[in-house]
Picture 1 (cartoon, rainbow, N blue to C red):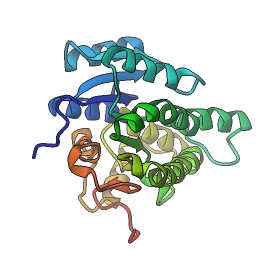
Picture 2: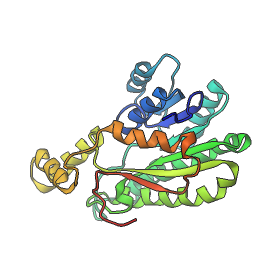
Picture 3: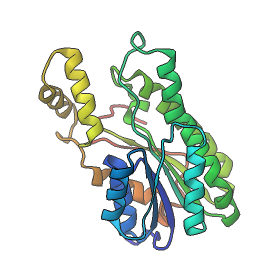
Picture 4: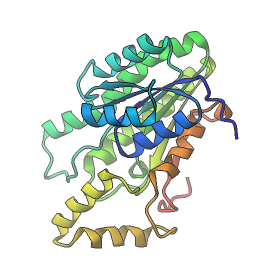
Length: 259
């Protein structure tokens, strides 16, 4: 299937590893020009070099006000336009209501919600001017089925979902689609870290936590990042021009709800 991404310019955030890197690699394979950002400058540079010689790497901490705008401006300066923006950040710390401070909430809000709002605000003017754009926010299956010990992620990724669904209606007339994509349990460093945190909390080995997860997934295994990236690439493509305001899970059947 020709996704119509050849020659498009895409910004993929949080792309030095894990899901973000997989999405970047998939978009590059479809012919898109890429701008990447992440906090770890060395890892980001290595990722960019591994994808191709013309990939723009912009080290940035999207949880710091002003940084999402700076990243978009760097992409515009390099490529002259931005067609696709993939909002993706690392997850906040695990924790319950009793273990989290107001400072934890402030940092998580800046990282997950405010960064998305600012990134989109910087990317939209050019998309509106050209009458074409794709915005995709990476959230989590936790927005539909909260996960124990992930109070911050459950709450704030749900807020991003509400923002995206509302924005989709506001910019549809400009030829811009806005969707969210919900990864389930995937073989990434983030899931490994969460397994270790939950193992410490429960006094068991991380392998036992992983086995419990796999037992809850109808397909019986964790996803591979490339499987997630395949849907992400479709949602930001020309072929998905009539899909907007949606929240799409890649979870192996883990979610039990009908919608």
